Length: 263
Image 1 (cartoon, one colour):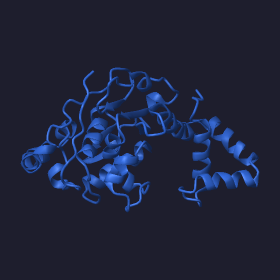
Image 2: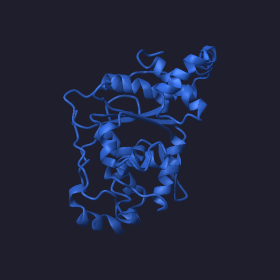
Image 3: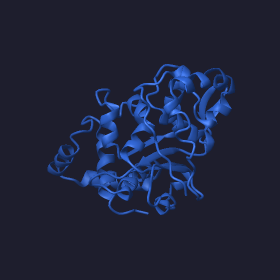
Image 4: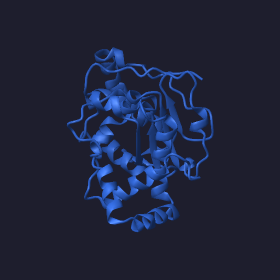
């Protein structure tokens, strides 16, 4: 299997008009915009053109992308048949930087990331993400309409992968969900956490949304905690919105299960 090298763009933010369709799939969807703008973009940003053309979908039956430079691509992890795998587009990234550059703008758009966090800082720490397809659609349309900026070339290729695999489609000029997948997640390894652990963590967030028995079981376990135990959870999750009780319960439940697959 070939590997690919994600190349950084010199400019910190990209002009929507010039880089809307650098991905092949988007070129097919918006041929007029491609013809009008792509060559101008190519001239202005030669270092960004064709940096990802060696990208390929991992062999297997499941949707997603393995990206970055690997000694041994994690095909076993990618092809794990967990209950929501066929409903989930998975990105397995060789580094935090690879992962971060695909979803920096998305994380800002959804307010998962504070605007004070720079791309460079995010590149050093990103280890996982999970979004519903509907959230991706909202972000994509905000970008295409010019209401929200693009920050990296990789964000375009992220959208291109989703179009190529028919997760996203164009409906009367707008990006829409095809309805075949409900979730998009990604994971990389970190200094103290393995790829498998981070991937399991993000998969459990999908399970939280999709499995009523799992959700109900861990809500019941939360109710069984003493006030002191709940306070300890809040302190452990001090970086999370303390007013979002449901979000705290979800993150606590996921962390309780991430070390071992519950499926």
